Length: 93
Image (tube, rainbow, N blue to C red):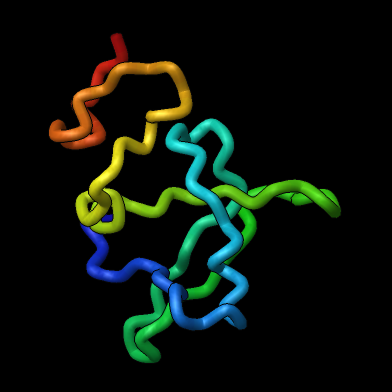
């Protein structure tokens, strides 16, 4: 799959439940994925495994989302990461 031009940004739309899905930074915890529906300018959230009631939902926000951010997403992890490097090249110290 190539680089997506879509990402969820429901800032002004509290009814969009995808706003409550978090990016855990590491793919180990991903339990859903976005499936693009370009013809409808939307996407669907699809589980990649069984999810139990009350479990937090995690998905990758994607490079496009993180490239727009002005803060260090690892600020609370105790890691030191070069946030200017592409995510595939980021190294913790």
